[in-house]
Image (tube, rainbow, N blue to C red; front, side):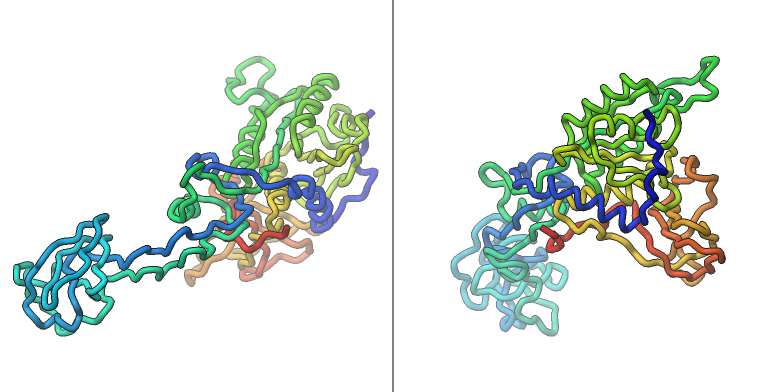
Length: 433
């Protein structure tokens, strides 16, 4: 029996987010796991514990230029060059008064010298003449422990490990021994697309019936999104597709639910005869937590929870822009909550560059690009679209612009909420658990 999604009134977007995020606790409460900082798979993981400096940074007074290490007070003298210090070699324990040593960038400055004069400021001879009016102590020296002291927090808990964080962790000694750091447990997600009209991505669609069929672009688009390590970073099982057959659909959904924290279905969630997904969850005794959201696109969005409350299923509309918008607005927030992060972080306030007319009845989430206005200030430009099936108009967009409902055109300069397609980093200290 097909369940009519209109049997429950649609929720407001914020209420739907609250209801969805509350289900992330099952994953968020899991203990942290070890991850190898040397393995590329760690990228996108969230630190569960801070990374501490295992020694001072830098661990010695470091020369920042090729040149000569001297005593600043002796810069007016002609100085014999009594040695050299390459990078990675211990410096001499003592340098005689009124003398200097040649030194390489990155080398340790002898403890009794306090300045480095670059080659270009000298005659490069032995003895050395310095062509500077004044040399102050500390010139071209990066002092020991100027960046951090041993035991300082270099990466707080809640940091998303990107290439920069990975480099800092290695510098802090995280690759020593097992090379492991403690990270949050990543949610496991299954993706199931549905529909007889949806064909494999490599189908040429040149048969007599293929004029009314489409390639499975939703599967490729959403699989890429859900595994995007900069913003989502979930563990995704191999995506599945189910034709509009109750037995095929049931087998795919049961298999997905058996191995996942979150099942994402695409299509089959409205009120048609062949919209089989809601009926299956209801037949399995799952609870309907959301049956529609007051928004455009994405009104049919649904949320189901298993009887033991360990697994949830999100139903996305089949139109590609709807599926894309709901993934960014809802699934992204749920994944952040499951990783112990602030689910709502990352929204910006930006002005419209051009006038735009909102939906009179529902908040609209329109793909938009960041651009510059005539004064060179950043703002949001919303391209023309042909509705939620208009996948090509996503090209060149940078995020979703929220337009609150109204009957009047919004003038240029109106401040709106903007959700970028990509997080601008998770710097830590924002964990909610």
